[in-house]
Image (cartoon, rainbow over all chains, first blue to last red):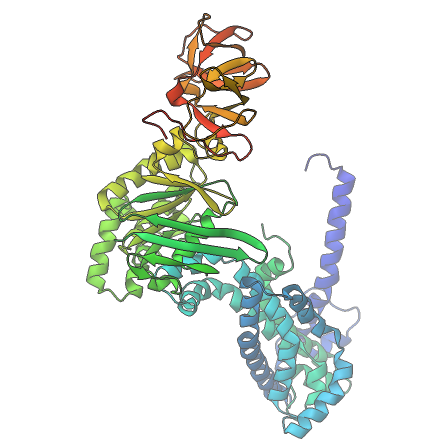
Length: 271
Length: 365
């Protein structure tokens, strides 16, 4: 770039590399140790290059008591959260994108404000409520809480998705014989599908990674993060690395797939 | 096919009045243009006819059927949007077929009609493409074809040419005119471009601030604008307006302009001291290089050669006006020209109200 000195360039890249390392180094180490032989974690100096790879540690984690059941619970919770928050969130996003109504901006802010209540304060009343309703220690209870947590994001993502679809298209469909509903189903929905899928995957990640509510609202029906966090203190070091990798990997993959939509949501132009 | 009738249509957006009491009749088979500057309400009016906006008051008829409360799909209209609104996830064929399929027309009939419409708009080779693979002009033609296949009673067009580049616009304009001649369809066409309006319209409604100022054939609007606004909006250059005062002369009232007297031939009442505007088109001004009786001296300020003509900016007293001369006419800034205004070409306007005062001479009103 013209007009920028090489000192600026160096600082810029140094900063970028430092930030990237800050995020990538732990992930790399987790991945490395998860795929090293069990005893590698205790060796000194620690191996920093993937010289001796092994699936032994991962196998140990996956076959440990409760892991598969917890994974299944996590998937059930995440899928249920995904469906529920899309059913509730997408229409709200559509309304924010398409309709002008009094207090629209207030609603937009209000949606974000639901994130202001710390889970720690909500958790005890929630646990009590769920015990009364007979939902305590079920995947559904966790999914309901996760839906509440994910909804603001789903609404804002879907609002931006629908805003990007010109209103003209629906109106043209209406002049060509569509009712407002069929114009939405035939025109806006197919066009919104990639964005809605991104929102769904994002919800999946939120639920998959959430640990606090899951740990408080379950005893035997643990989700994976809840299981890992409760057995963390009494498990060997290599088990923690394997568990960490097992949880991080799906989230990483999904975030890579949908990053374009997340940039869009956060106002960073794609290109 | 059918005409369209509006009775006292009013539309507001919050406190903003977009349309005040619009009444209008569009004849069956007519190419009717709504013309006005941006924000005059022309698009809103079109959207009210389409059913995309609900009117606050008034009634809308298509043919003899009242459609005021009907949704767009029950009005038997089709619309071409300024953005074209071609569905990006459908191929050209499916775009054009969309409306017919919504009506559950048998697929064989759909194919026949899509192919005919595609033929009329030179889209035959593009039916398998997606809109993203088309140029702006092609997308515009898809939008027109998609509306045409519906064989609507009224075709509504919202600035369909404004997103095309100048050369293509000229071509597409002629194509639209040919299309209207071939189909005989009733078309209501919104534009802010007065040349487009003049060239396409059987009749033009000039709009301003939510009201219709004048409805007339293009040449009538050009020659006999109802208000100063219309005269200034239509035509390039706009109509000249020279301000002066009515005075009593021996043979009746005369117009006093910058120290010169011009006879008034008016059917309407004028009173001495009333401020008037003398409206005249550049090409109607008679120009002489030498002084002669009744002619007004004007000093040439600017000479612009436009190819087919010379556009002259000249000054009478303190007022400037535009006039045209044949190309090659020797003229230079600072030179004096002698102008006379033929009575039948003058459009008298009241300076205060900006409205035309009917002339008394036969053949003009």
